[in-house]
Image (cartoon, rainbow, N blue to C red; front, side, top):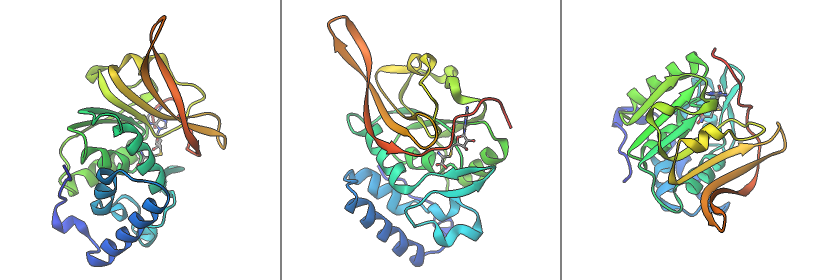
Length: 227
Ligand code: SAH
């Protein structure tokens, strides 16, 4: 199920399509193999998720500033996290903590029936919502809130993704996961974070959440309070 974005929202037309094609080739060369993820990222105009002054750099495989000292994640990291999230089963309902530019949420929205996303900085959230509208994306619900404790109202989720790093993962997030759910999050202090994926594993003592490392990453910190 690849979402078709409204044509007028495609912006730069052929030029940006060629730039995206090149980016997809680079992601493949780096080991991203999930066709569903590659197809979505091939059609989603990342240049609409950054400020106009940076649009020409939108298809470099790099994180870019989005204001308020925050960044839109590197495309490779978005591809890696999304692939890890949908590898074992396609979630129907996903929660993202850290909407930022909205790009990761938009990628998920093309794959998952219902996406919920929480952002603590109101200005970023308003910009992200504008982008969703412009692209005709209507299956994302968002909230201006501190997402450290998830979004209990709509739980349980088949998938939870954190796009900001904390020292440790909170119990409340696991409480909001469905039993066959998956959680992907960067964990650790700035500069030394691991990307972790948690799934429920049957042990002798009963089922328990077990994490595996998907490699080193560098994310902005998960912060408390609203802006
Ligand atoms: N997924 C985003 C990445 C944004 S960077 C994208 O695709 O662009 C991480 C975001 O997490 C920032 O916007 C930051 O403001 C937000 N954030 C940090 N702590 C948060 C918290 N406790 N609750 C909600 N959002 C948070």
